[in-house]
Amino acid sequence: MKHTIIGFAILALILTMSQAVQSSNNIGQNKARNKEEVEVIISDKPFDKMMAVLLHKRCVNCHPDGDIPLQGEDSHLHHFDIERGPNDHGLAGYTCETCHSTENNIFSGVPGAPHWALAPRSMAWEGKSRVEIAQQMMDPARNGGRSPKEIEKHLTEHELVLWAWDPGVDAEGIEREKPPVSKEDFIEAVKQWIADGAIIPDK
Amino acid sequence: MKISFKINKEERLVDVDGNTPLLWVIRDILHLKGTKFGCGKAACGACTIHVDGKAVRSCSMPIKMVAEKKITTIEGLSDGKLLHPVQEAWKKEVVPQCGYCQPGFIMATAAMLDKIPNPTDEDIDQNIINVCRCGTYYRMRKAIHLAASLMDKDEQ
Ligand code: FES
Ligand code: FES
Image 1 (cartoon, rainbow over the protein chains, first blue to last red):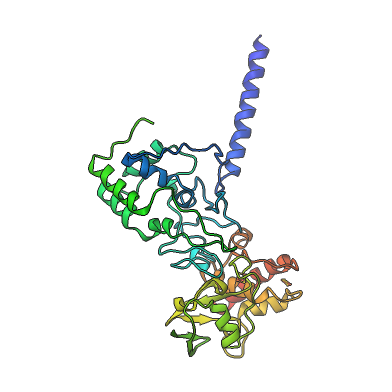
Image 2: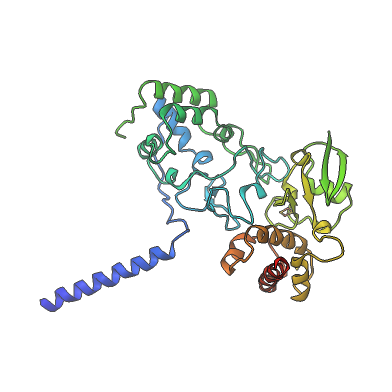
């Protein structure tokens, strides 16, 4: 029995160590992707409308859980080993602006908008539920110290956020999908939700 | 639309549709054929040039975005008669095979060395992401390290 306990202890130690090696190998890379569908609820409630947009790939692709942006309608990892870099704008030798300019490119299909960049790591949305995203978005420790009014301004006025409704065409000339709620309805919903106290439901 | 800019230290003015890719202006209007067309989708890097010192893929940059900016192409990388250290290193390591991708790689490398003067192999892997169909990556890596040391010497 004593031997069995020692055996288990050694096995547990080996497993822990191999996990530590695995996680240290993952530094700077994306974690395994959460491929489960995140639930989107569309209704007339301001919170539902707002979150239906924030969970859309046009938003989540630049809020990845890791250091590699997502791209495309299937949110695959950005081709060409593109990385976040120290300031969320890519690496020293190539930044986001090496390819992305301040507007969509109608010839190459490369999307663009002012301030094209990744959201900071503390604002990763990929794989999170709408409640988790909302909590994170309203938490000054994780949202860049923004007040609810500043969040409202960011969501309703920032050109990069509003790009989601003018996403242009891809390299094959195929239009990118827009969020499931219109820009006007989204802006109204955000303002209403914040005016009502930014209450986050349980689910 | 009239757009003026500096290219390889020369003032130029072109009158074209503002959405015309910079690469087309460089090659077809200004007849600087050193910059290459590979994919036209910002995927291969053959068209890399510098805009205000930063690497840019010119196939995906509309001409209207470079008004009053400074552009450098492979033709203007060296200063006068001397080759740029990256070109010198490329020559010493006999990097090119067919050569098609090389101007883009050289421009991308020069931009990287400006920010990372002594790159590690990892820096090179992360920052030089152009495509070479002849597979000259191994010689490029050697040339990039050599260019870094040549630049280091130049500065001393
Ligand atoms: S031709 Fe511009 S990146 Fe390929
Ligand atoms: S040398 Fe031929 S493609 Fe690079």
